[in-house]
Length: 262
Image (cartoon, rainbow, N blue to C red; front, side, top):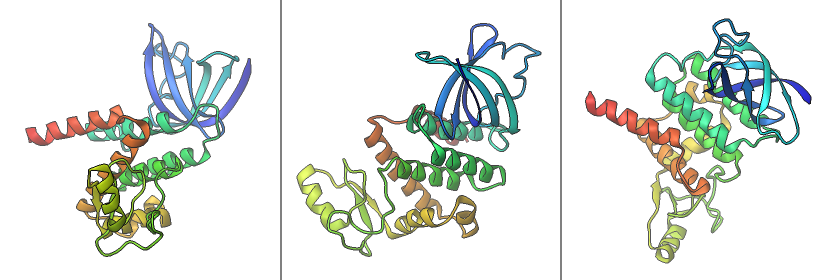
């Protein structure tokens, strides 16, 4: 058995049998891992208070070749999951952030950039950064790190700058193109795609220039810009994965239901 000790961000915790838990966690060097924490559900467990979703911990585990689940022997809490566990909206957002890492960060592969992105986003949220802004920043960067959503600086089809009309995401596209090229693509594909105005393009470029805290200090973005950026990221994500993240669907349904009830 090989033993490891690394900093990790807890992504998911599920009950297993009567006393154990299955824990998914993200590390810098080994990507995301899943392991069994024996006795974690017992009242006086050594894991008591350590395995909080989105907490930052130093996790100790051992693994055998060919085994899907590692064995977690201990976890030392480095930073609790402040800012997201106190209300339903925060819990939904936390699940959404973690779900990205479970889908995009690979097991047993270095994931330094994904780790830094989630870690810095959680720190910014704990410091009071607007949740809507944080979610849009996070989802755009996840797609960038996956290599499928570059900053929109020029049309990749013709190489020209985006005009005052903005850009378009074709129905089956993963990159923004200028309206002129989109017209030709639409004629071939039978659809117009999503129109993306200039303020949204500027926001997406700013994401690459500022950290989340810096972006918030610059004033963030207008609600209409955030909604368009959200829809844009969702379309690119669905096209890449072939399906939508379950956490996003749950979040949308739940928040829509709360808004309707209000």
